Length: 626
Image: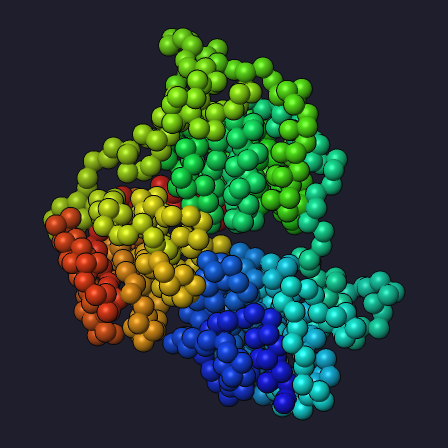
């Protein structure tokens, strides 16, 4: 057994079940080793697509993703997808062959590429340590939530391993007896503690890599401060992000005790689905009611959430008197985007559970007197004309009263009714702007929401259109929405949907793309067909880069560089082997219903000719943030 084979065997023994990539000479043997040990390999048509497939597979499947690429251009082709994964803190291992001779055509400073985009560059250095180094890279990716580039030098890959590696337990870190994978850097060696002085020049020990696994228990003092703050809150709102996706139960228990409303960032959409207090997404995609209620909060807690310009609409969703709290495993994330009143370092679930326990032990001493509110959730004293509304304490006979705390909080029976009636975007009236052979994207998306089965996983590309599927398509839970938007690159949506579809084969995969992103990633239509995925691909076609059209057009700039002649995207899809339909009005959606009722042997592409009368106001946030 050589090093390449050992790396594949170790990753398989750690529970890796699927890998994505494009195979070249440099990663041929390590990929075959993965396959030999039971790992499914998904061949993409481009490394960029493979990287995003692996990212989405990890996000929606709750696993460590694996990407396998050739040295040099194989890695550079994948860099946009790797950047998205790194910015999203996706647990992902990139197995990249590496040449170390600068005169080689394939040579590029692969470690520097990884560092530049926020990934962690590591290298297998010897046959004797390959197994342990691979295992430790896996644990850094999984437990540290990092995207790890594991460089496999060609001259090391072929070396024989003295002893076949023993199976490694996926539940505990590898033995520390062997050296960790070597973080590679061509920069000047950083200063290191004396205990690490034996590390080779230009290298640092794994323990010094930012984001390495550390304690997830919050400090008792910080828990007490958070409990005190929440105990005094009258209108608390929780905003859960990527770091809270596994903590629904703990957050709902705490929210019920204090009367908090529940919202998420875009990447955690669906986390609280089914709760009568679910406001859905906070920020640019927030409905008018959700924005009103978040803005009215006196305490906002971001749970594993950056509270960035998107989630807080450039800070406009934070009321002038609101106190802002962040809970995150990463201390550097606290206050990174805006001033906060309190930052708690710790695991979201553990922190929420600790605060709930403390509040339960503290009884009524930590809670203010109950407030009386009107039907909108506002305190009666803040309603000059309508007078007092319903009290917070119901008699228990109304189903909408579920979760209304006896101690006050933001919740009321009347507010539960408003959320049920008004919070979905489809319940917000609008003037249909379709006509002349084009369908309003809101009408299109509402129609699709009615047709598509509830058990779905929706993947959304970036672009002027992206708010429509994000706001008007419901999802069953947090695993039903995959939003690869941390880098704001267009062209990742189709590959995202492939990874999500493979992670959740029991759900209908829905890819929502703009025409620009669809044509960028069009090669992966062949992958969808080859894999036999019963996927719905919706292309919102306004024949241009709509964000730029609507940003620069009003100022009189020429738009020739961002608009294009019509393309028959449906015909292109049929050429790849998809079924396809062109939609210009709601009646054309009957063909979609027919596909859903049929055997679904081939994927369906919906080429939607959408009206482009106006720009998306949510992307105005993007241009303000440039």
